[in-house]
Length: 433
Image (cartoon, rainbow, N blue to C red):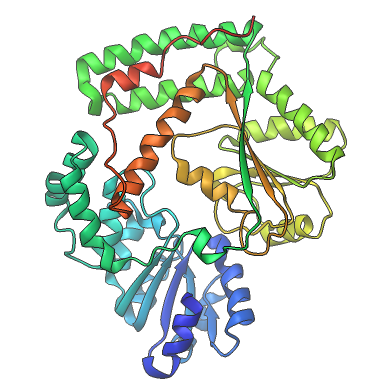
């Protein structure tokens, strides 16, 4: 759609347009432009020799740069006027205090366009940050937005405030769901695989849970819900790590525990899936967890590819998987959740859940997208009765907040209270041994 928009304006603009993308997407955009809009003159300002191309900016229709290069090339980029400045994966500037969020405000353009599948990942301040750049003044000053919208909606479930916010942003959003864009896509089936903890791993979970429960209660008592934020996140992290694999837990009590219920379950799944000829993406938020899975995969002599934030040859790895050279792709959720097209896969395994459903959808969408011609199966591995199961229940609330803001027909979100937080640290439900 964006390439079509730029093509339509090519003869009218008289100025270049600037596209800012994550580093991993420079190649994607230049290839897609050559494929779908070959008449667009595209200049990619990327790599150590990019400064030699600065003088060519004005003579191109589309100039592509990256968020990390904004601060290095800011003086040159800000000196040029643009027809349109476009942010891809615009949630990259969701923090209004971040340097990139400040630098984009210095770019002069007739129009601004933000492309994102996740305009709000965690809270409404992220939505405000996008619109404060996109349509300055639409949602007021940040403090006023907090008072009029974020506080009432997130804390009180104020449906009138939610409806007003929805109406205000609606004229400035083009929201198209996958069913509208690609109605012929084959079905996607999401399956929750329940894994039970047992033995030493179960005992470790309970030991850490009891300690974390007390820490969180003390923090809530003395600092309140807002002040206890860091303590709660740290407690959640430790319990999630136990669920994934005791090897992730950097405590002496965990060092001698080698059994991992979920990791064993994953290997059994992969054995069966590969025997059926399936092509599999395995996502984890923990790079260290992926390394443990990698060791298991290598021990079984399975061919695989690997992608994390440190990976340099992303496009080669994608091509290797897409052409069928390897059946397994191990991917860090942060590094590979966006910017990849892996339609050769028909199976996605989400090893560890998090309570932002948008992040999980992005992972699923690496394969369930235009070009996919087979049914897609997504497996979410959830540890029975644990923090993971309780997070899964809370995902519905996170989704409700997003739905309520972007679609006034949805009811408002429920409020996450101290009682909800404490419920996360309840004992494991019956099961295991």
